[in-house]
Image (cartoon, rainbow, N blue to C red; front, side, top):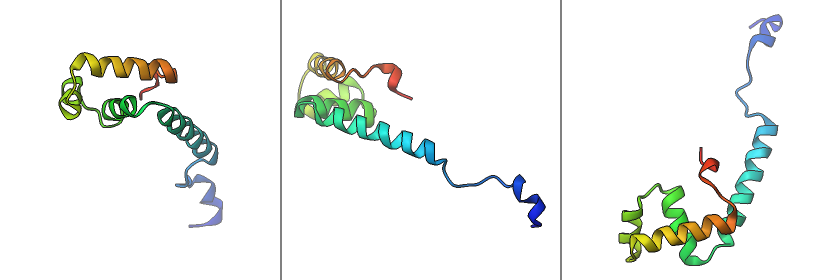
Length: 87
């Protein structure tokens, strides 16, 4: 490719600013999850990360659906997470 056409080539490398921003978000999420109790962490990871339903989580953890919802509510309140943070 001639050098004069090089400006038309888009770099495939990730944007360093975007990489840094994503790394900061990942760190904040990790810290928030680590701050939860083990029971809250289990429910949170199964629901938000693994995308399981309340019923599935209740079955996995041998607890009621109401308990799953309670743990998720407590976890989201403690970490200031909202459904708007999901993408």
